[in-house]
Image (cartoon, rainbow, N blue to C red; front, side):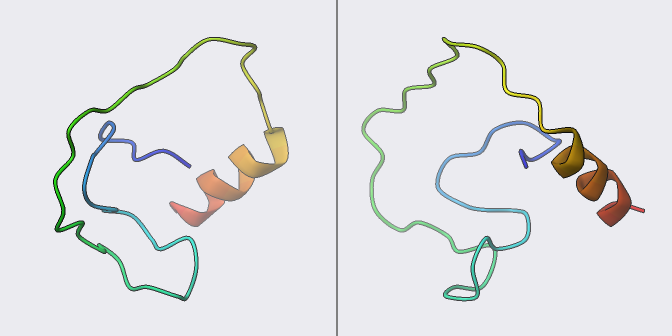
Length: 57
């Protein structure tokens, strides 16, 4: 699930994806470049989208 406020670099503002770390898990290093590759086919996972909408209620 993407952050509905946009992409973020260096922190995870949403829920953590694993119990191994606590959100927002701020990155303290240095990001020199960021590449966003939007090529390829769009993958739509209807079940995942439904779970996301239910979680936001």
